[in-house]
Length: 193
Image (cartoon, rainbow, N blue to C red; front, side, top):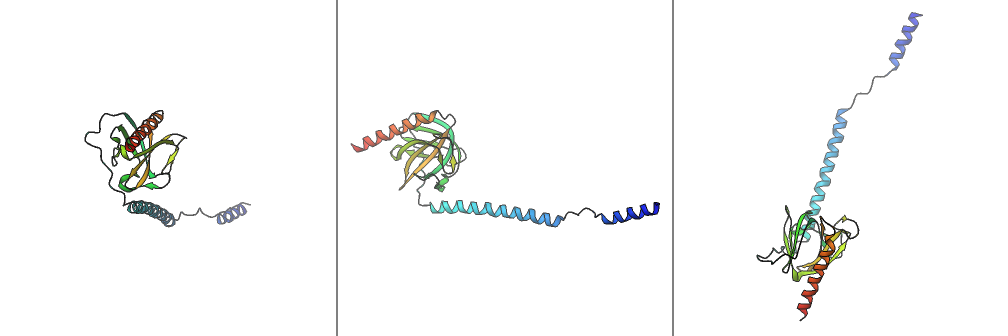
């Protein structure tokens, strides 16, 4: 009976298979392939961004702030979410750095709207170029709560642009819309005389 037990144990041991050995070459191949795919997608996105900037090359350089803009009517700290073709909230403008999201310091004076963006291109919108201010919920792929975005429409070259800003204190948005629209109406009235 002992020899039968040994024979049975030997047969069972022969039936069991050893655990499969990991095929490291295949795993490394998949990881390298995945990394190459991610790099390709990133490169294509970057090239698309550069191509969009080339297509928008007809936009003139952004105006800088005047040496003496006058006293500040309003100031605001917040985020700049981008600029688009007016009325088309997904048609992002990337030329001259207008597509770069960043922190922002806005200052409204009689001369216009000064947009200071640390780490990105600053620009100035002269009062005569301002067209409208409104509250909206989205711009350039960024969607917020209803009325959570201050959108300023302005003329640059022969295009109308919408630029989206979000204040650190959203309650300021209504005050900005009123002040900008009053300033625009005043300029239009003065221009009609």
